[in-house]
Each structure stands twice: as structure tokens, then as C-alpha cells.
Image (tube, rainbow, N blue to C red; front, top):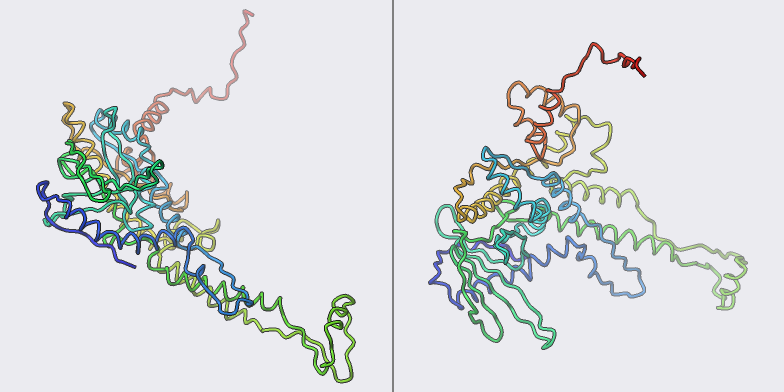
Length: 443
């Protein structure tokens, strides 16, 4: 597979030319047609076993696919963002406006899409923009359609991004490629037909490149890239044993010392289901012995290696009702480490999203500071309820109630704190709690 590359160069608006755009797309195309296509195929279940060919067309050629790749991505994404990200701030007006924008853009689903795409291809991208109604919007982009360019500073900040996509003209039955180039201040719209031409430039007010990269890890690798070859071996194992079983089902009947048998005799044998052998004759099936133990051991070893290399446990085996919370934490330790790495990258990108939105809000006579928003992740990992309750109880004297509620995954902390206060302020007459009401004697 063509490895992903990080394009690092200093680009100003004046440096953007059609030649530069063509060169960057030229560098990107092999990644899309090679690595990205392979990763997408393996997630969808289009594995190499489906291309397996056997010279003898009369032999069985089963092509089963056991898709560990989709299992790994779906499981890790569920652990990571199965519980929504929550936000807190000392500036309630700022938080209210931000949450309204998040709600309008279905931020929870957006985060899941971005994490899912990044899990497959190692990175995903999001465009922040202002629509025709002057509403701030953000949407996940097709990973295959984005080329990011980073400057040469230590921070490697984005200095340019290209988004390209194909539009089909059904009347003319032709395809036209649209290219949008984003810089820190402008958007340049191009159309690529026989040659590339600039349609129109426009200004934006985000003060940064409004396309955000969500990296899955520092190497921008997908979660199942390292186990693709193991998955291929597993599929081959399944295919071989399926073929052997079919061979067994189609076993040959051997008629020993009965060379005079004719086709009519075989037909009568099938009809009567009786074999009359001559002296010294024998009838038996020629079968291939199946070594189930070796096959199963090989398959089990492959399964263990896949889960070990991907850091994703086999939930059907590892998780059951008899496992304590402490044991679960131990079994999920390596998975937790992967989630921590994902979280650090994802949090940085969400901070960029908030900063871009804040730049637009401040252009409307506000004076918000994006660092006032605190981002809280809540892992959707299996844990023991009693252990969690015990941890909360122990922490209650060391941290604030707000922090505790945030840590256990309460989305609307303010609403929860109000409910707690309302309950605490409700007067209950404990002495007369079980005393029946006195009947009204005036009735």
C-alpha cells in the first residue's frame, strides 16, 4: 500500500498556481487509489480471499470472509465516542451559544463519523463554514477528497487545504472536477475540465484554514492496518477447511476387484442402494482425513494474534457477568491506552473547531476566549458499577461535585446540579413519613 504522506511547505496565497494544485493532486492520487482503497475494501469486507482462483474448476473454491477489520473499527469507535463528548465553561453565555451551534450541526453524530473515518484510514477531515443563512456549520468530508498542506514551523500549522470532488453532468454525460483551495483568509474555486480554470475567489473570516484534520494517531494509521495479513490468513484457513469438508461430502466410491462394473450397474446401485460384490470385491469411499485439531489450533492462534496486535479484546470471550470491575480494567488496559492516544489527537482537533467557531462569533461583537471551553471525554468502556460508585464515593471529598458529575459522564452538568439542589432543598417530615393523613371530620 502507498503510505500516507504529510505535505510540509510554506504557501502564501500568491504562491497558489494551477501547477502547484496539479502537483499536489498528483502526489495524493496514488494514496487514494492504493492505500485508502485497500483500507476501505477491507472494512467493507472485500478481502483478497475473494480473488482466489483454483486451476481445477471442478474443485470447490469457497471464499468465506471473517471481517475482523470492521469489528476492530466499530468496537474501538464505540469505546471512544460511544458516550458523547461534553463541554463546560465559566462563561455561560458563551457555552450556551456554542452548544446551540453544536445541536444544530448534530455534533454527537459528527464526532462519531470523524472518529469512525479516522479509525479506517488513519485520518478524517471536517469543514467549518458559514451557510447561506449566516449559520455556522461543520461537516465531515470524504477523506479521499482532501489534501492538507502544513507550514515549516515547529507547530506545523495548516497553511492550505485542497478539497476536490467530481460532479456528473447527466445531460452531457460528462464528469467535471471541482477544486476548492482554502487558505487562512480566502477560498479559491476552480473547475477542472480539459484544463483547470479559476472560477471565483471569496473571503472568509475564520482567520485560519477552515478544514480540520482529525488524526487517528501520530502516524496517521488505521486501527486495523497491522492485522490485514493476519485476517487474510484467517480467511484462507476458513476457506481451506470449507473446501476439505466439501471434498469429504463429494467422496469417491471405490469398487475394488469389480472392474466389470458398467454404467448401468452404477445407476441400479444408486436406485436400489444395494451393492453385490464379487468374490474378493470391496466397496468403500475414498475420503481425505481432516485434522480438525491442527486446523482449529491454527485458527485460534490467528484469532489471538489479531486481538493482541489490534489491542481490541474478543468481547464474546473476555466479557461476561462474572468478571469484576477490577478484572475488566486489567483486560482492557491496552485498549484504554489506544483510546487515550485517540483522545489526545481528537481533543486538539475539537479545540480547533471551537476556535474557528469562536472567531466567527467574535466577529459579531462578542469577546469570547476559546480556552474558556473545557472538553470532557467519557469512555464507553465496560466497567463494574460498584467499583465506579466506590471510586466516586472516595473522590467526593477530594474534588468538586461538578468535576465528579463530569467524570462519570453526565452531559448537562448544570441541569443535574440543579436537580440535586432541588432534592436537597425539599423538606421531608421524616417523623410523620408513615403516618396516614387525618380524615376531614367536617365532611
